Image 1: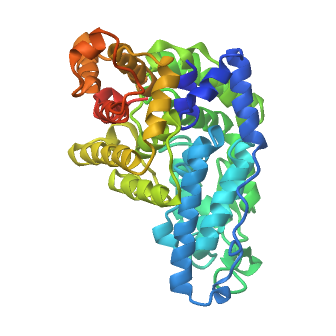
Image 2: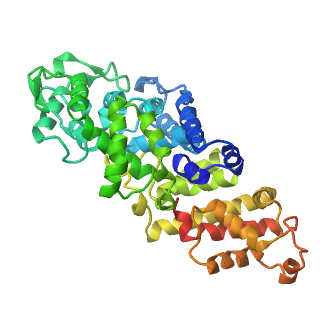
Length: 461
């Protein structure tokens, strides 16, 4: 159960963290994860965080380098921050932007910093803040939305993707008048500076939004949205959280017994997110056997979970390689395919991406074996199995540790055992002569890990 929590609420965890959690009640364990996430400071700002274009000496070269550096930082945050890293990834796939569209490193930092700071706070204020984010104002054309030339792009996505869901509780007129109310954020002191409100480009006419008429502006839109459509927002967001953390499938029973109570908590708690997450993560439903292995690992899951579960070595050079491979597998960091984000689950797997997943794991294990990390393979095996010399037991324990559910047949376990035995004569196992101190052991562990990474079950969490 603890492994399940770490796989869903973070990118897995080493055995030491799992052992530590055994001393806690499930409720206290969840509280500790949520409280830790809430208490984390945001990642320190780089020196270029508030640059304007004129601050660069060589804009094209430096901006490209700073973008690459911050993508690397995000990868390192994801793998190490447990629930906060996982939530930041979720919200970046909700309040979507694309760095290839905006292509400005300071705005990328500011966007990421804002999500880090708000990802466990009040969803109404989170929504309010994201609409005024510089990267969002450029990505969804808020910067171009004026009284003389209205642009409905952000207004549409605010209702359709960010708060209510497609066709749920709004009309085309709500979009039109919401766009008019969002006008005015069209100026900066110079390119790359903060975008600010200018009353001269604001549409000061009367607007009707959700049946309410007035000279509405930006803050009024957010207030009206949560006041008039709060219950719909709550159900939409709680459904997305359920699908991300528990299961992609929601039927009528789950909607009634899980989503609606979560939504009621969301509304009753004035859209504070922590109580909703705690209620979901502490539910029997989250821990139910039927919730295991029903989510397809994302490309980030494939490698980050594996690293954390094995406490394997990585550095910035490897992290860059992992991010490049993740892009080949369909998840380019900071670059979802469009404003609706990655659709996840089954969309991650096709004939091309599955082979990249296999190849990445093979290359990484081979790298560790060849670059001086053989001893760690042996230490991991000894720690997981209490230094067993039984190849079947060792193979089974590795499978249990790296895979979230039992294999389909006993022959699958036997095949893994045979892979692990490698070229060691059978009589050495039968007579108890072989041990994990043998010189062949690192290669045997490596072969077993590569075999596990090719199992269909390895692609699930």
